[in-house]
Image (cartoon, rainbow, N blue to C red; front, side):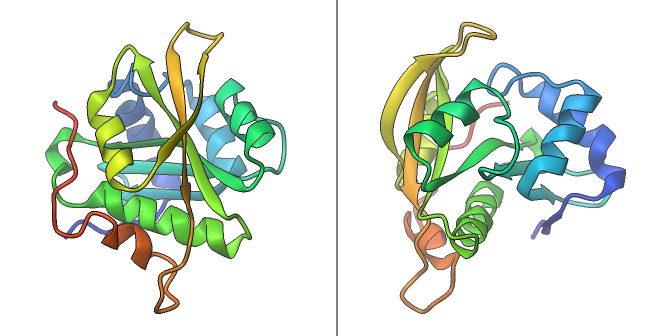
Length: 188
């Protein structure tokens, strides 16, 4: 099983390349922008070996300036939510449950920081039906739509509770929401 761990400094070059291979599902980044996101993160996780990660999740809280219009929208309309800025898993690592484990860790970190929910956005245009289905599987529900002024993408904002499981663990709820049914994975 691929290990989920904090981002290490040695991961940055590979994470930048991973991010930019996932455009348009996520916005492209320059090295300075990735560094700023990682420094602002409430939680920054990588999957796989140090220096050669196969996945990334960046969770932002309310501290500091908004990291783009989508983060600003979630902060303004849902201050109870920590914001998942980006998540991606390489094609070679898909189907191993990394997305679920990333989101479980994000839910735990959000709950520990006092947030009641997780917020994010998914592209409607260009469409990203796999991501929409994945988020629906995890209990995310639409709470708004907008057009990103930076690139014209139409997005839907999604929200899900960051509630602890009944056994007191903070990540059990996200891991249990889909049962054993596979959540969809993006092609390629």
